[in-house]
Image 1 (cartoon, rainbow, N blue to C red):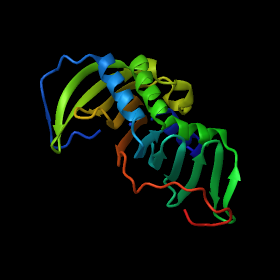
Image 2 (image 1 turned 90 degrees about the vertical axis):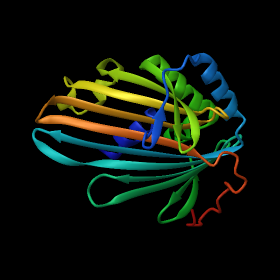
Image 3 (image 1 turned 30 degrees about the vertical axis):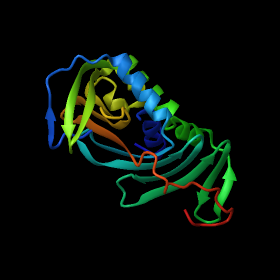
Image 4 (image 1 turned 180 degrees about the vertical axis):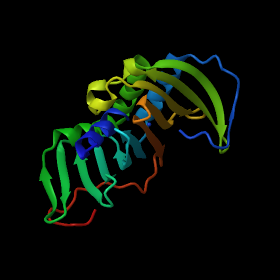
Length: 248
C-alpha cells in the first residue's frame, strides 16, 4: 500500500487497548444520550491532543510483506487552530515526515528545503477538520450508521470509569474496491471500539481491528488506534509560523 492509500485510511478511519481493564456487566445505557453528552463535552474543550497509530501486514500470492505503519499527531486549539505532524513507515527502512498548520482558512506546510510556506491542500485541510470537535462527533455518528453495535459496557482502566461502545463489522461495511485486487473476494471481520470517560463524557480513544482472508496465500490484518489527551491544557500553543523558518 502506498502513501496515498495510507493517507486515505488515516482520513477515513478516524480510533483501545483493554490491558488491565475490568469489564462490568452489560449496562443499560442510552446510546443517543451518551453521544449527546459526549458531543457537548468535546465542544466545550478549549484544546486537546490526539495521536493516531495505523499498522498493517499482509501476504499476497504467498509473498509476505513487512507491512507499513503511520503515526499522526494532532494538536487542536478552539475554535480553528490545528497543528499536525505525520510519520509514515512504508517498510523500506525509510520514514516519510510531514508537518502542517491550519489557522482559520490559512494553511501552512513545512517544506524540508524552503521552510514554512503558505499554501493550499484541500485533503489536509479536510483532515484537520475531521479532528475538530464537530468532526469527531461526525465520526462517532458515522460508525453508528455503518457498523453493527454489539454492546455498551462499563470499564475501569487505570482508575478511570469509561463507557466502551463495541461494534462488529464485515465485508458489507468495507469499500472492497479500495483494497488490492487479491482481497476483493476475501472474508472480512472486524471490531471497533469507542471509549468515553464516564466522569466528564470526553472521548478517550477509538480503536479498530480488521482481518481480510481469502486463503493462506492472500491474507491481511490492520489496526488503527486513536487516543485523546491534554484536554484544556494551557501549555498547548499553535502560533502562525514564520515563513522560511524550518522549526516545527
